[in-house]
Length: 239
Image (cartoon, rainbow, N blue to C red):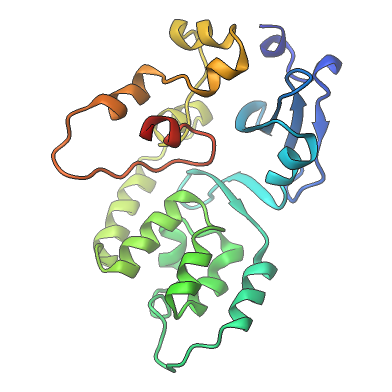
């Protein structure tokens, strides 16, 4: 409660990290645990937890959290384009055939959620190694759309139309967007969640919110894919 009333209180060692969009912070929970948070329009996002100061802060290195201008989605992704380009240079494709994304226009890639700084790199993808390296840098929504196209499981025209519909109805309000976006959860007056937050942090690490428990214990026909940014509980659900 003390932290929620004033996240920037000096007792939390609210440390502003020197990162691309200048809104990512490292906060001390106790003598062992630290969390990485981002501040966007006076709203705080809990992104990651860790046990070592340097290791936890390194997780946030070159990370960016921002609202996509085109789709309205909140995205967490790497801005280290140079690292990816260096990997591309180390592996020259044998074939001179066009890559799977070369025929997709700039506007179409933006509609699919690809951040502007990654457009050129997406067009350069030619091999499996290129693609699987790339998706590790991109926000989840963009990586998922490109994955469907790359594997042939999704049709570009259908994906574009689906995203256009989402864009046309995207919420203007920050909290409304978070409520409908996979991978984010609004911390409010949720008694189940608030109870566990008052307990030891190790309990919280293995806690399943009722919304997560549906996926862990549900009876589904066939396989099911669960996506979400790092630290959202995918592994706990799988366990």
